[in-house]
Length: 223
Ligand SMILES: [Zn+2]
Ligand SMILES: [Zn+2]
Image (cartoon, rainbow, N blue to C red; front, top):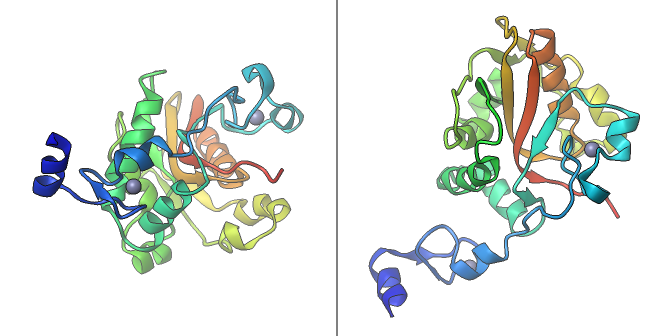
């Protein structure tokens, strides 16, 4: 009864099912979010028996050192991220950022939190950087000026997985030394990890000692 009255007084519609909700999602949809769980590779956050370093990371070690992701990139996480990224639903940044913050839970000391930058042209077109909007809700010292995106590659989603790494090579630059810094890189979705790998390469070249990915959703590889 109290929930019902609370819904009438303060609530709106659930973003997913349009049912009554006091937040972005109703309790049922929130409970059904595709949480990324089970044994995961500490480096890339894909399922890995015993939470050991996975075969892919052993064979071709990424530049980043660890990945934290609360969600799998399945419905409705994909719909929420898409709405934040392409439809300007910035209220979702707070909701999704809090999910990520819960997962981060002070596991390690981080000196800087750096959202994956957009190019100046894309930022003008979209009007905001969704990674920065998410990062505003995370713990740590936000830094959105040290690292820039110098050129726009073809959007990664339009390319086959095998070509994505080459596509982002040299895309980022650091404007200052990050000597010894432990950096968290924030992004909305991690698919092949090619963009985050290139970010980590750039940050380490600038002196970063450790680079950890903080991403909302992890795409699981095709079965
Ligand atoms: Zn719902
Ligand atoms: Zn891995």
